[in-house]
Amino acid sequence: MYLTKRHLSRRAVLRGAGVTLALPLLDAMVPAATALAQTAAKPKLRMGFFYIPHGAIMGNTSHGSAMDRWTPSGAGADFKLSPILASLEPYKKYVTSFGNLENKAMIGGVHSLAPATWLSGVKPERAARGASMETTLDQVVARQIGQDTTLPSLEVAAETTQQNAACSGSACFYNTTLSFRDAHSPLPMEFNPRKVFTQLFGEGDTPEERAAIASQTSSLLDRVRERTSALQRDLGAADRARLGDYLDTVREIERRVQLASSRDLSAITVPGAPIGELSKFDEQVDLLFDLIALAYRADLTRVASYIMVAEGTNRTYNHIGVSDAFHPVSHHANDLGRLEKLAKIQAWHVARFAAFLKKLADVPDGDGTLLDHSMFLYGSNMSNSDRHNGHPLPTILVGGGNGTHKGGQHLELREPTPLANLHLTILDKVGAGRQAFGDSTGTIAGF
Image (cartoon, rainbow, N blue to C red):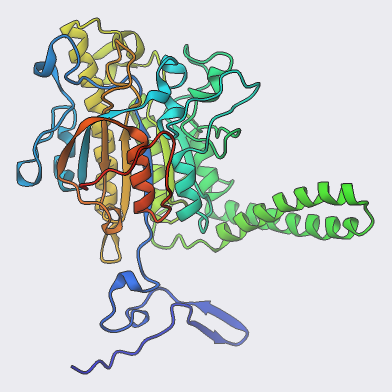
């Protein structure tokens, strides 16, 4: 066999008349007879963490398995989705469901500990004066795969998580966010779509406005850098150290600005900036999913966390015929009417997630689609909402994971297993393997 294909460097540029023009990805940049995964064109992994409060209707109500609306069954061709998960049917081959997972870190905290401990597997130090837990899974992943993007991670919520019945005192550190950058740094979840938009694309309603503002910001940072560098020569050791910390922050901002200014948005149509939070909750939920999908497509971030509705929320779901508030109805007392309403709410949220998956499945990406090159954790840190227990947790993993995840199955683990075992397994799949995470006892085999 003769291979005559010419190989260009992925960094090849066109030069002339004082101008340097970067080239798009060309077939000639992929060496002949070379697997895509071994080249610079290898698709980048996207990861997402999608949280729903108040558990799911499983087989642990007084009605037993007959009322289970969450748990799938079987594997491969025999894999059958449950009523709550039915909207995922087109993507069934990407879905792995887990049975018998538990998270002891949320026990005793009810709503106050559920969100933050979902991705940490560590019980916070409630006696500490400030936030005190551990770095969450999404942030560990972001350090591994997100450092080359404008936003290493994106944290959003469909409604404000700051003003709900479950937030008071130290609880506000742990029930209003999924994400801790480190043990003492909870990250806020942004619920205003306009602010999310400006995080991704910059201030301004039009491309021209955004370019002008970005240019002004860049030149301002340059001036700050020059002045602080000159000042540093005249300072004592202690002040130089303080100024050094400041300069580190400026350098990080500069890095983000440079990444933002060099991003290639030619493959997507950037919509106009949203006005703000939408009054219709269904549209609000979808808009934030759309912004996450757009960020993945433009490679502005590769890691996203989304609280789809706040812990302890009194949100009603009139748009699907449920006028009861989510949190009160979650205390169902095994009433069949309330259980059916909860299942309806939970199925609606999964359907919105399924619509998001479709957007990614429709986008070609290298040798597959964005969904092939993504991996998403979807679930709750509560099981039976009437009991506020943490076992078994409704949990699914969805997406091709750049070839690291094969779905189409329900894994019923033999004994109660720490949710952190799944976190540890995910870290292996993204190349950030470690000996332990949270209260893990090992990885999970079989998927």
